[in-house]
Length: 198
Length: 198
Image (cartoon, rainbow over all chains, first blue to last red; front, top):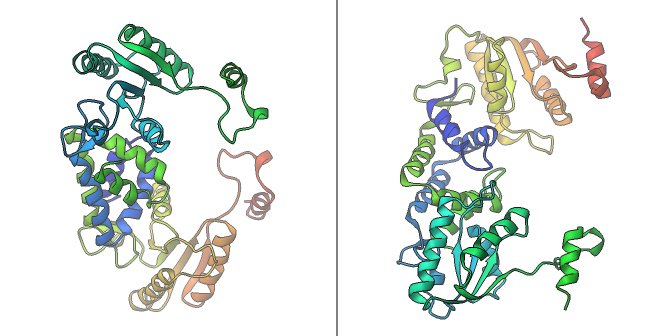
């Protein structure tokens, strides 16, 4: 009973992350009700994503140019590399305006705890980078994975992979977040906070 | 720091219902990572919505043809009209395969409890329909609005508007939903269920 274009839209968009059939249906009706100008604006925004590529160095997104803005920036330290899981993690770190090194975007961690083929390829690529551009040794690799069981496990795998390839291999500090309350912190966090007291 | 196309996408899509900046960002990264074929499929699905128009009779969506499939169907009773709030309500009723009349899609009810200009226009249009096509009187108008305070209030407004223009003006029956448990039904529902016992 639904017109073909609506059915197609629902079908295609309900496969996107966090968008199930319900939201896709709602969007289809909402978008159908928009005037042509508003719909055009959204369509153009959508089509614009085709211009997005991946930086061959750190695998962050980029548009135009050979490298992404961070890798192309000569003021950033090439021999300090933060390994992050997702693009959004990189963005959060950049917003903190403290880190001045380069990145490697690893890609989403698999629930299984093993490295996916994408992760393996990217880690191999980082090894190449270290060999070719940094004279076989980085100054520091910061494993900036979330402090979860999966993150901890993967961090250990990475640490072993890069043994001997970096002067230091570190992880982000753990403790009570700014604004957080000791009363509500879990045991693991309190343990970390005590250990990293300063 | 984000490439322009990504920023534009996030900006445009975070304004859609149920999609805030977080989900828009997530989608932007996800879509950027898709291969061109998959992205093209979604783009086409999106562009297809431009073919969607509104039925000038009942205001349900349609693609191609002057009227929507329901209004164009000669087997459906023209003089029994169900007034629904949203397209999705119409779809739910159609799925029940019991109603064989026509519809009026009213448009989303305003929280203020007053009729919006869209609702007023559509109700006026229904009056015209009744005058011109049904000889001044419908057989039945079923006000199929949700049994909420807002729905009840709007139903009363509509009842007054159409007084004398229909042999019957009814609302959907209230009671305990199939599969529902009496133990967990609220008082209003139980009251309705008792009143409509059969």
